[in-house]
Length: 94
Image (cartoon, rainbow, N blue to C red; front, top):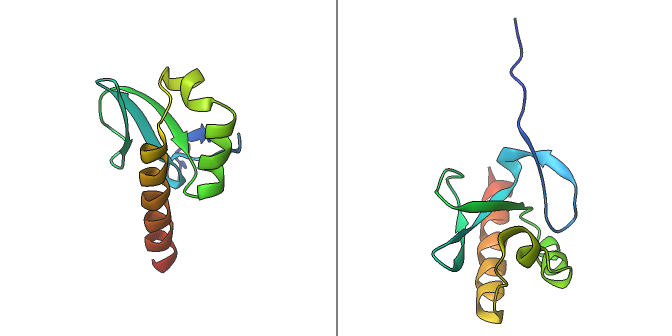
């Protein structure tokens, strides 16, 4: 039986390559950053681990500006952090 190749993506925070299904896609859509939980929305995207520490690293290293050409404001970072924690908890419960 032939095994399918697992798509790998790199987290913009910790810079580790992980399976695409383990990461969350963030897109730049109409001048705003938002989470793309389906992974299929239109717009330029970057991937991030569900660990809030990776979000902090990405903000500190200006990864959003470099990859998506947009910088998140403090409110967006807080919202993303809360969403990532919620997603991580739901994935751990499974």
